[in-house]
Length: 108
Length: 114
Image (tube, rainbow over all chains, first blue to last red; front, side, top):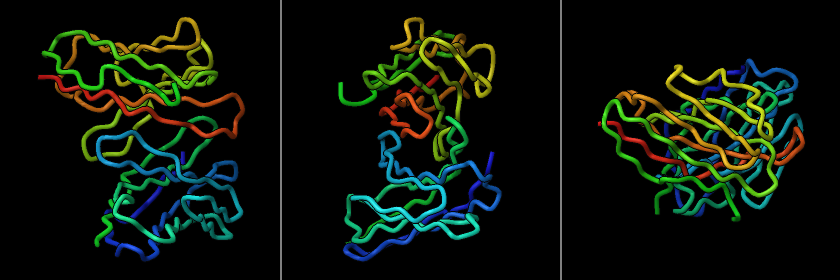
């Protein structure tokens, strides 16, 4: 299973875009990149996923490099409620492999 | 219900006690997963069911851990003779049929072994 590397923590100003990097250099060709977040005391919440192409939904945008070794989750206008731990677990088949995640603190 | 439902939400067990954690997946979801999350860490895969069949139990840490889903819907994770290192959040997740479908998580059951 692929391993991921993310910054341990990052701060973001409310209203600004938050760019969260994820390194997944060992990802295999059939593993999707998934992003989840976990707000304190809650279960992981699905955000977005992709394989090769960039993706956008109502929550965020996902930029995947051409070599698929890294990706960036973009929260276009961060709010205080976006404070959470963000994970980028690769998914092979039905198994998600979570790392330590990035603790994002959105500040007013 | 609308989401994955887990009970109990919080459980305190004395060391050596057996515990049972219940998961009610999203209606119609054939795939069900259990993950374990230690404090400050990401979730770790325990086991996976497709309907009533347990297809992968490679993540179960010891033979004290046992999961079942007898009718292909509700699942129970049982931990026998609990130890302090079993203290964690136990997350259940489910997915609709189809390899590309999203995996949705419940709120978790917080187990503290004292």
